[in-house]
Image (tube, rainbow, N blue to C red):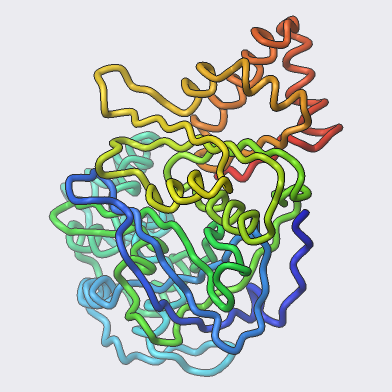
Length: 384
């Protein structure tokens, strides 16, 4: 069983500036996604972690994005702004303190107030007055987009209170500390898109994927220990469902169990769009199968056939065997998208309890949601 992580002097308030030493694509040419393997070196930090923990990353904005915003604001980037720790340049604040890749509603309202009477003000006031239209408007725009469309002037002192501050992003760790001492590995889907004639990235994923130079000690990180997503004892069987980047903690689990010589069986469900381009860590999992670290691997590639197949469909196909594993004491883990995937997997577990356990709908629900999840604590989720 994995042991709780030793507390570190490095935390959200005092992150460690680590360096990225590897950054490569896990998806192949032709994929609709850009999922990358990021290796972060922990240097002399003394940071320790356990499989199931997450890495907190405090991202920065792309220099180009900062330059575009400063130009649109018509403010000298060297303008000094008083901070509790002393004066800091506007450019540095916009680089590392504020979220500038998604505009806030309070800023749009401030722009509206500054606009002179006329067609532009009428147009924007109609958007702001309609909740759905306002949501759509801010969803695809950053601050520069709005200022390009509605050029009004702000001072630094007026602008900064209208902008939200950067918060850490948590990434499930994709490595075992026993397999990679002094390193943390992440599986990151880089969000890239274009709106209003400008190419953009998700803030944290873009920073890790493209916005940070390798081998520079400048990635602020800390460990967020898991409260519940621990591995069981090495002799216990585990079933893991992790499509897409949800695979991350299960790579860590399998690496760790392989080194520990775990005797329990391991069953992994993985899914993504296409086998040829999106089978993350395929060679590693093939090697684990050959070695016996991984007992069984079921995959679902939704776009490889006319009818979309997902991990929950593979669960249904293997329902009898899965029910047998659960009755023999297996732990069931799911990691990834909370809104759809995890919900569908949850319902499929209930269906399997009905079909293969002979339980009524009510009893099946009670077994999965109470007995398995709460009483026995063998149903564990890391969803987001």
